[in-house]
Length: 109
Image (cartoon, rainbow, N blue to C red; front, top):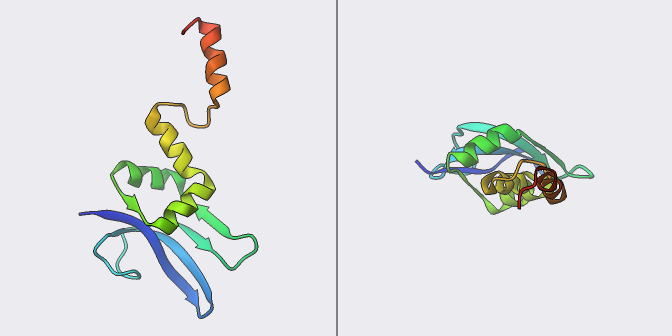
């Protein structure tokens, strides 16, 4: 089963709200979901984005893909950057300068 993280529309006419839903990729937009991992309110100033990072990391680790819009929201919140850092072996949130300083202290090349 191919799993996708995508938006599910809620709210009333001309005032949309969206939930980030983990769904089977064959299901229609507002169809059956597996889990909600956050929400997005585009009508507030500034836009409100609330995400469950641990659950998103779990689903990405299990091979879930994401829609273009969800990818943009994850990029804005910094989750994709942390996900790629975790994949490259860096400690999450560690800056490159801090890693270089720790190498100097231990004498590594």
